[in-house]
Image (cartoon, rainbow, N blue to C red; front, side):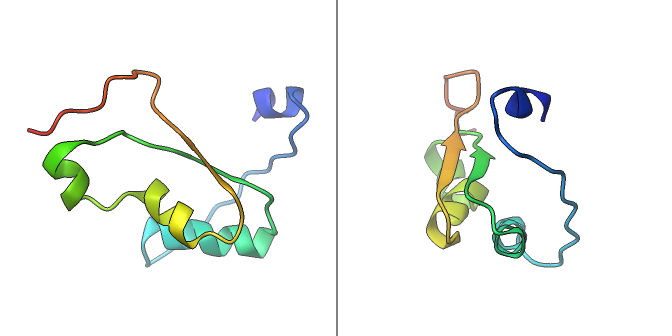
Length: 82
């Protein structure tokens, strides 16, 4: 949060307790807070894992009512399917 503040962004922590999917809880919280942007990381899964595992970032892009910035992991090599 300190880096965001240094760059002129307003941030605040917000704890959400949810019994639904993680992406759904984030979308609901973003609507409650009236955010301008959601920033989400990704694990960059490939192969079968990408087909079998639901992506939080992907669902945010599909369901959020505001822009979503998806940030890839620092290690630019995608995680390989086992």
